[in-house]
Amino acid sequence: MPLRLLRFALNGKHSEPRMFRNHDTLKSSYDAVIIGAGGHGLAAAYYLARDHGMTNVAVLEKGYIGGGNTGRNTTIIRSNYLTPEGVEFYDASIKLWEDLGQDFDLNLFYSKRGHFTLAHTDSAMRTMRWRAEVNKHMGVESEVVGTKDIQDACPQLDMTCAGHAPILGALYHAPGAIARHDAVAWGYGRGADQRGVEIHQRTEVLNIDVKGGRVQGLTTNRGYISTPKILCAVAGSTPRVTNMVGLRTPIIIHPLQAMVTEPIKPWLNTILVSGSLHVYVSQSDRGELVMGASLDPYEVQSTRSTLDFAEGLSAHMLDMFPFLSNVKINRQWAGMADMTPDFAPIMGKTPVEGFYLDAGWGTWGFKATPISGKTMSYTLANDRDHDLIKSFRLSRFAEYELTGEKGAASVGH
Amino acid sequence: MKLMNCPINGPRPLQEFFYWGECRDMPNPDTCTDGEWVDYVFHRNGAPGVKKEWWYHMASGVWFIAVRDTQADEVKETYLYGAGPHHE
Ligand SMILES: Cc1cc2nc3c(=O)[nH]c(=O)nc-3n(C[C@H](O)[C@H](O)[C@H](O)COP(=O)(O)OP(=O)(O)OC[C@H]3O[C@@H](n4cnc5c(N)ncnc54)[C@H](O)[C@@H]3O)c2cc1C
Image (cartoon, rainbow over all chains, first blue to last red; front, side, top):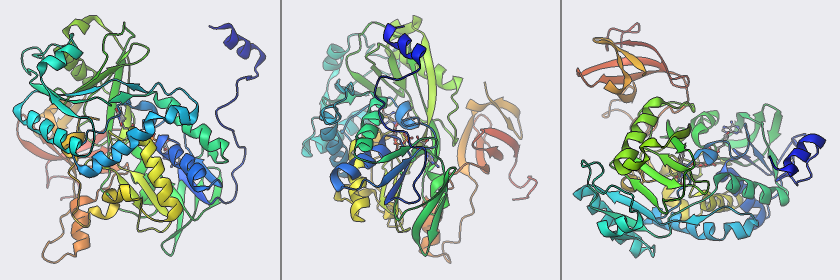
């Protein structure tokens, strides 16, 4: 233990500045209340204060900041999606990510690694070509590469995947990156706090007061707050909160699990994803392999994890990297993914006046943290959907205008 | 290993089963409103609860109903359609 830490422990006083203030009481009213202090809620608070001058804002969090999916995700950031509206949206996020650390004056460990989506079948190759063309058309660096490029980037990869899923090529996305998820929540939280926003942890929203189709306020475990505007950014808890205002949505909750190995010497420089083998993997700065797979096969609203998952993912990892057979799994966990039928988010205004939704982030929403904060703060401040999120409106289902993102998002993160 | 009780084959490993979502009544497409149809096609009850769900035992081709607490992930009972306590 470093001496500095021991000194803190002994004298009981924190000489290090805290990232944000603690407030003993809630005010009786705010101009806007954000439910959920994950990356999305905190980013919206940050841009509301910074870009729209709205600072009489509270962010309410039933647990601790970043304790939801933000702190549980495998942090893959990319914009090589399939639909033009998806590519445009996620690419705007990448532009924000690139100087976010500077913006916050905080090291986010944003690390551009390059991202390979491996194709093991002809039909997967066809989808990769399709995505590459859409991406290039939208000005995003994205290309189909052959086996030599993949092997050069990752000599340790068994290109036959134990003989039963030979790799034919890949979609390569040079801007693909990872970042330190906790720091993202802290950076947005600190920035919002410095501009006057109040962050209240251990404050759970229990009920929302709607009269005449308009939001009036909400009840928390610490009392009632009146407010004309509520942003719901609660990911896996979305159906519980939309029930409070009587809003029906297509969102269902499935656990998404992940795990890490013990730290090992750095060897994996890129991010690798295989849809066929249900694997995505990168190596963290600490040397752990950070791995995920596909969604749990049935609905569960909790964060339990399963042995099935660890066994299945390990088997596929060994197909790709037989040399890892002696490496141990260190930790395993789950988050609650808020899934939509077309694998695109649900964002913007709702039929309940003053109730704004930022949800349906499923297995892919970490990369969208900055742009969702930007666009939702605009939407809330102006009571008008930002142009970039119009395709993601809740009413697209009733209008039978779903997006076609499923092909690129279902396992790719 | 997690087990599930197939009404025909008894307790079997969960991997042998396939989940097909909550039991829902289809409105009559000839008489329902557009709104009711959209609600049926797209909207779901995503909040936790004790739900009646369709499950399928893949090895033997049996469709059946499971009553499950979706937060605790605990199966309360399983039975064949029509044979349940509530006679679907
Ligand atoms: C295992 C896993 C891997 C993933 N990998 C990736 C990836 O590689 N790349 C990617 O882009 N995305 C990934 N995702 C998805 C991504 O993590 C999420 O979409 C994103 O973090 C959602 O952020 P959020 O701020 O909306 O939600 P969260 O971070 O979940 O925050 C919501 C907060 O709301 C709080 N809350 C809920 N109900 C209430 C209430 N009633 N009152 C007060 N507070 C409440 C919760 O406590 C929580 O802290 C992954 C997800 C998981 C689970």
